Image (cartoon, each protein chain N blue to C red):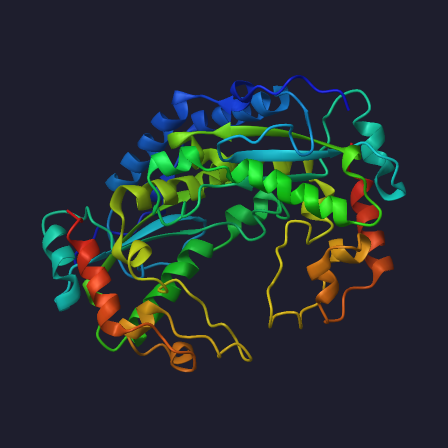
Length: 212
Length: 212
């Protein structure tokens, strides 16, 4: 094949509109109504959500304090994308009608309920639904919110969003999140050697110093 | 917590600018110079790439034909995102200086070289680098290109982008891609029962009918 001489510049995409658009979506996100966790109704759609903590657990008292007057500091940010999204295997119709986001928030609620030292009523959430072409923004906005807030459970305590690895795979260690918050049934089945609890807590404390 | 009554409408983000922006980036992508695979120089950056086939393999003659006059039909689309991107663990400086995209194209070249029935010189590529905040667009543009082109190796032949599962994990079956294109050393170590070759080829043929 004959090709033009290599010139990196010709391959770099520049568009400031993108930065503005992300800011607009983040502003919208921060202005949406805060709901209890899980929200009181099931709903259709995929999108991005944030969980806020305002309880009395000693590890998270900084979050409770920061969120006292307004919900500005999520402890976790996540996304629910349309099934088969990456492979483009779904039609737009299916995407719009799925309940992924609602289901994901319900799943998180169950995990928090199972944790021996957390109370579901101490959590609340925000979420934004992205429909049709807009669903392509989901990963971008999730990433922007994580970069902006550096939520503890995303950045300094791995494992909250994990799923049951399934039979035959319990030789792995339970996640850091499960070391700190015991109680998830499948996590307690994991036989591997988990990380040291004190080391995890030190890491969380270090991270919390930079929040707020 | 007291919260507003639930109203789904208040949680739906609407912004047509996003659709326009994705179109602009896809147009830019399609206008970038086509390069041989791998490109002649190493370069810095992360982003999105497409591989094009113009050789004489019987399975892919439709691609060779469609791409005869211009490179419009990729056989594979992929991305290279900054390391630690999802967890926001990297600084912008690190992102900009990584060679992820260049490395990924090199890796694909090696895999094609190892395949017994493919020739590297029959492939070429396009790639676009997204820098700084723009790197948040990478997944979105990859997804848009996959939806647009439905590349065979993304949608109807799984496994080209796979990595060596590593020792102790070779009980799994080799991927469909490795059934069709034998030769990757680690794939040949996989002991599981792979899918039937004829069934895979039927699936590829069915998919190719809808391309172009």
